[in-house]
Length: 208
Image 1 (tube, one colour):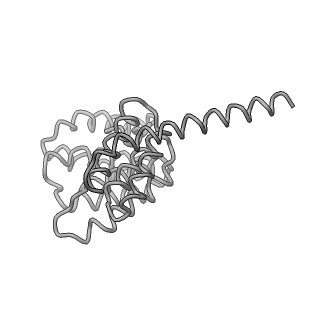
Image 2 (cartoon, rainbow, N blue to C red):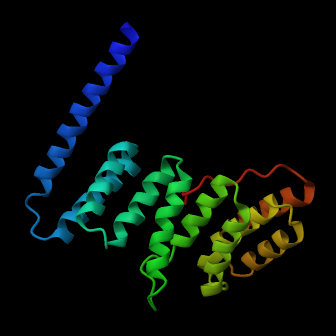
Image 3 (tube, rainbow, N blue to C red):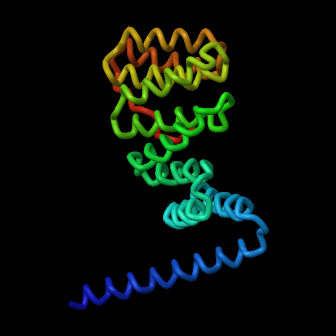
């Protein structure tokens, strides 16, 4: 009974703090003139709380508030996907990245070209390697020879190696190094692990 009452008290205190936090946020955005300005302020705040302070719970609340204010703004879903990913909720991060990708890829010029990479990372976090490879492949179709694509080749080689597709993984490493990317050094280390049969530990989603 005492434990139950303590838990109830903690819950009440948490709700009071959350209410006070959201009220403070409302006061801070009151000076913003347009809805877009308010949303921009909120999402900047959310990114700071999540990336710099590790308060993903508060960042998620702010993202939800921004999305409620302007549900047509893809930036809200993009930022919320990052927050969810950092929380380890890869399933819901994928859902948010997917909303962004679906809308963004209807345009001739992408506003969120890295969304597929980050969604691929989350697929890897869930162990859905083929889905990750599909996203990385889609990105490489845009610029497979650019030195900036080295990271994507590395991630794809990593995913393929975890699928036991040794030949394809080694080919991805060769293609990646051919771009002249500085990621070639990491790819060579991965290549050595594949050839010697050492355990490969995938990169942490959204780490780069």
